[in-house]
Length: 480
Image 1: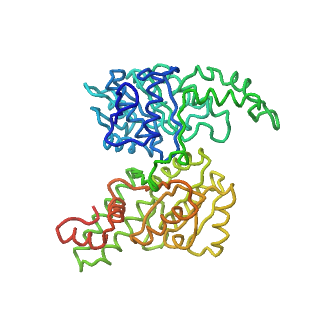
Image 2: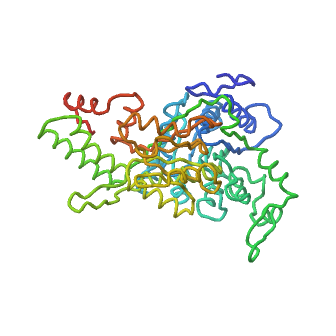
Image 3: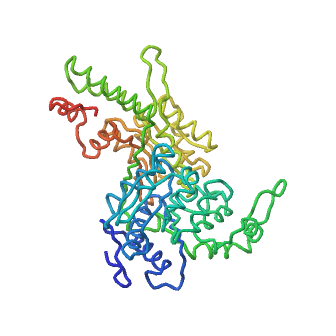
């Protein structure tokens, strides 16, 4: 796709939407690769979930690499999103690169980073905690571009992750901050994120920034409140190096966007899962292979990918993984930072209970419809009409019919059942009459598990049971 200026291309395997191209050109202007009155070595992409800030960033990265401006890129992101960067680069990057997700123990991560070399662009992807623990190693690696994904993670100026990103950012030639909005619960959050992007915007001192833009109020004068007289200046400075895109403004977005979030089961949980796969396959060989037999065994594997496993002797349920809960928490961080509502759909009761506990621990009000809930209408009305009710938690078999949840335009499928009708009915809760924005669907899928087969079958409108029976009869393990 040609840029409007100087023929600068956005090197991606996709046709960008207009707002993505505009964001690319805005940043290229700041970085000096396109004509612009403003120059900055850092930029903020304030793009809501579902508007494609990762794809836009890959285009920016490729253009900088093709121009010879960068050789090493560090992507810092929440743990649950690391795999997203690997997958998105694979799908969209139309330029040579070598990417490594830094995983394992500390020494393994350091070893991976030290051995990244070659003529093509080197991209290292790491989570926020590891970034500050590996600060010296990263500084020695000398990244030319640092990307802070879900940048609201460094909104607090004096935590270790923020301080590390401030120091690392000061040594990098280019910096990108990606988030739905830099202002989460309070405007004072802007400072730390912009100290990373470009400290010239709000200065190096948090206390000088706070004194200039805020009054301290409340008990003990500890609550910063933005001065009315300073609102315009704060917004002008913030947007001088920021590109803003909301779903409501992006008129060329498709009505529905699907986003896959692959999560990694913890080693212990993965070991249990693999043992269960072998056991399930062995059980099939001892009897008649029918759709019912296969789906019964698939059920236990699906429960495990959601984090739980039942004890056949005691009927108790044990939690063996927090991988999906952690991924959901990262999504909550982003969507709540944007001030938007979220619908969360899950299949199993233990998952529903764990999700509700997570929301309660974060002091977020929510509505819930699952088996046994009597006040369905009240739960829906609270979510639809009360601003403080930020989340809706629904069991896919009981919350997929006859309700309207258009107060949200984003839905997370924590887990799925095998019914195409349940799947389509659940999706339709937010995509229906009254919805004014494009809808975004996120699927939490445990990598290398039956989650992938279930989602693929639903996406292809295939008969999952028949597919798995055919797998077995062809000599393949239907659960692997």
